[in-house]
Image (cartoon, rainbow, N blue to C red; front, side, top):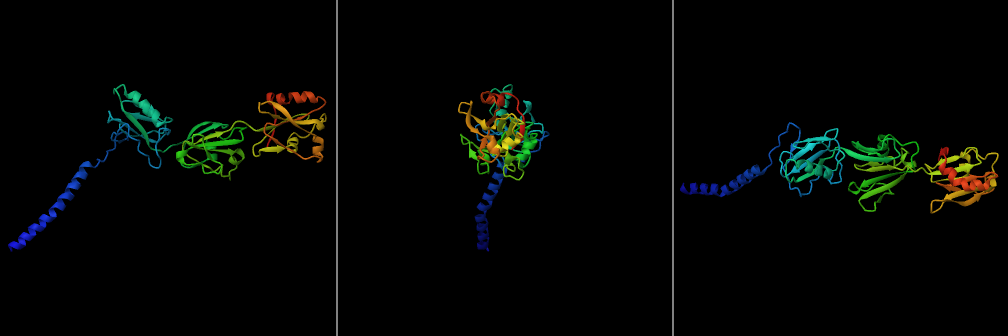
Length: 352
């Protein structure tokens, strides 16, 4: 009987270290586990202060960086070693403001995390001698996209969810009456390369860039028009129209804008001008083109009468070319060609 009792005691004693260890681990975990943060009246979520020099944590689905722009409905985390009151996560309002203790209401939308950090540090110096402040974007809900150039309302727009290039241009009021021939999209490399064949890195390697022909951008079925825009993309619509001029003795002097093509034939240009006038001297028509110094010079002659009759081969004209159709004042037209086409008003014949 005594042996049985001794065995029982030894068995219980042998198991005790295991129970004791389990209880110790559980107690330690309970003591070190973060307490559930109660919801504050202002809707903010308290955040424990961190080392001001520590790297910013990553927001879900995105790595926060100092260059990121804060937008409406984003969440920012502010950490100040000297103030527990301000050290928490705050939601930016739909109008871009955030109301912080000590500092008050601050318009944060449009600022980078670094810019807001510097602003808060300056404001806190009224109450704290040397504040150590860190700001990072904890959650991205806004997707700022900047549109510049030949659109009706250039600026920065907040997009929600995937948007195509054409949709973003529509948000900017659409294209102006006479946009240029290209749309350039610039993307921060952290969002990946632009997924189109002609995309290339910028000179500093920090961005992905592509120049898209306008004819593809306005084509709703093209890959360019349906390119998905990422946050912080910059979309630049060129403002330099590509024009080919025809002046002198034609029915309708003016210019043809190259939108969907890179060049136009002499016959197509003459047709756009409704043909020759009765005073034309078509045998001495000239083509003028800018040289390396930006000055117009004669680069060729063409007999438009023989061209119309199919006796000579047609030729292609590039953006900036001027076709001069003279009358008896050939010399005057040649000398004034560049001035007439560039300095005086011209009629836009058509877009090609």
